[in-house]
Image 1 (tube, rainbow, N blue to C red):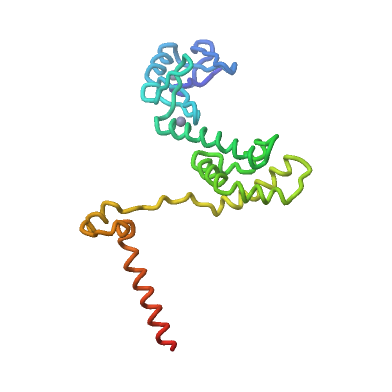
Image 2 (image 1 turned 90 degrees about the horizontal axis):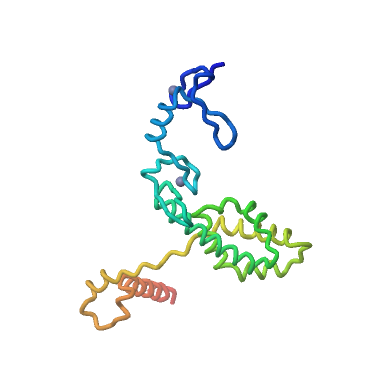
Length: 215
Ligand SMILES: [Zn+2]
Ligand SMILES: [Zn+2]
């Protein structure tokens, strides 16, 4: 019987092929043991702990934890995943706070699956932190037969809210620019809003003119 070599894809005789049985119990065939060993040393592959992709052991990001090596595609992926786990943990606490115990995490993860990824989980965390009081009030107005029903109702609110939610943007304070332009100004308050202040005055003046036209 002919089998296919896992490396060079050549059709080879099963009886003379080099056979390896993988953990799942399936047999893998190779032209020879030499070919297998050479291939293995050249492509020293490991699985990424996060995305499960096969990666080269030599270039993978490696962590030695709990007495064994763990491999990841790269450091960035590892850091992002750690952040995801932290955010997910915080979300778990927020969900307990909002929905109470027992909290059907499975139902929620399924219904809000769109946000169960690094970026989405961060958004979900911020959204819940910002809206937990309002959502809690909305839930308090209703009566539910069980926690699953309550969670489903919550997911309706959260899913809708998340579609319109944006992460709060940090205000940009142009300290460097303003201290250059207003270095001689005695008034410290002006430094915070050097651009907005004159605009506001102009607007006020214009509206006064308009008022004058009316009378
Ligand atoms: Zn071969
Ligand atoms: Zn990966």
